[in-house]
Amino acid sequence: MLKDIMLYSAFCRQLLTHLPASKRFVLAFSGGLDSRVLLDLMARFITQNPEYSCHAVYVHHGLSTNADIWADKCVVWAKSAGISCDVERVKVLTGNRISLEQAAREARYNILAQHVNMGDMLLTAQHSDDQIETFLLALKRGSGPAGLAAMPMILPFAKGMHLRPLLNITRADIEQYGLEHKLSWVEDESNQDERYDRNFIRHQITPRLVERWPSIHKSVARSSALCGEQEALLAELLATQLAQAIQPDGSLLLASDVSQRVGMALIRQWVKKQSVLMPSLAQLEQIWFNVVQAKEDANPKLCWANVEVRRYQKKLYLLLQWDDISQWQDNIDLDSPCLLPQNLGSLVLNQEGAYPLLRQPESDEIITVRFHYQGDAIKPVGRCGSRKLKKLYQEYNVPSWLRSRTPLIFYGDKLAAVVGYFVVSEFSGHDITIDLNS
Image 1 (cartoon, one colour):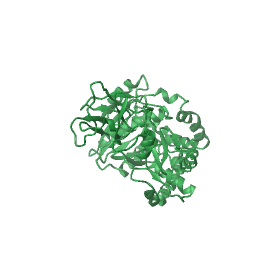
Image 2 (cartoon, helix red, strand yellow; image 1 turned 180 degrees about the horizontal axis):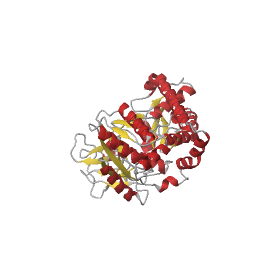
Image 3 (cartoon, one colour; image 1 turned 90 degrees about the vertical axis):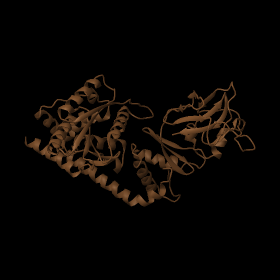
């Protein structure tokens, strides 16, 4: 009973220290032990503080045959606790060097962000054993202070904040609370699969560390906090220099005389601002030597997780990795939008517009949209001669990675326009306007 009181008191202390401006909490609810206990604690808090509300969200990844059953149970448990609950279904897409775990995590947080309104507080149930796992995974990746800082107690998220109120509580204490309060919860069979690094640490490493060093939870928390403070201090010292280096388009332009140490620190701070998985030290060094220091006429890049760093005109760009769309094409009818792949927007050829660019197609000319062209030299409107498309892209300062993602309009099998850049002279006219809606 004493531990029950202490756990609830620690939970309330975190909530009362970080109350949401909107007086609304959003609880990430998987139905597992940790979030099941968090739901119970939250119900107790709401009862004692009725001016606050809470809404639970179960994210259905579809990765287990039991997911439908878990979703139903979560709705029942939330209703019993007096808390509303939504079930959100997502499709987890892997590839581009991103693991199933990372893909599921990103899908989950993307959905949760949609439920966090202005001033709301997202609650997740990570605890001190999770912190050990995160710390060791960062150590395994060769991360620096930013990675070893592991999970902060609170941080900005979507339109509100993200709080982990159980972060200083052990898994053992959470389990004891669940048993004492006769709570039931779901058991995700994937949590036993030690092919996943986090599960291997959970079942094989953490128990031995705790057995050998009972205070390991506090030691890891202290080390993580110190790394976090060091990272915050570094960010403060580099703030002015970083602001000057970040360009209006979000790219990073490093001064020609910047040292390797400062340059790598600026790159790390720049990546951190974009909320992606941090590169390891080895990857950071590769960015410096193989991308920043590459020859001027090179087209260097470095990939990790689902992102890549590219260089163009001395500036660094952090980009998502996309699947190849060179074989994609679709017919387009006048005045009807054509939905482009990979969130590139929709394309409309309007017969009425302020800036007519294209002529009407002939009766035998089918209009298509594509992303690949390997044909003869072409002549844009207003130019004297023809050039290969690659050379034209260079003249129009189109970065190499955007060239394969720029829509091309074809009349029959002939290239008629490069959307956003030019119309081929033989297809110019006063009839059709090109509108690309991102």
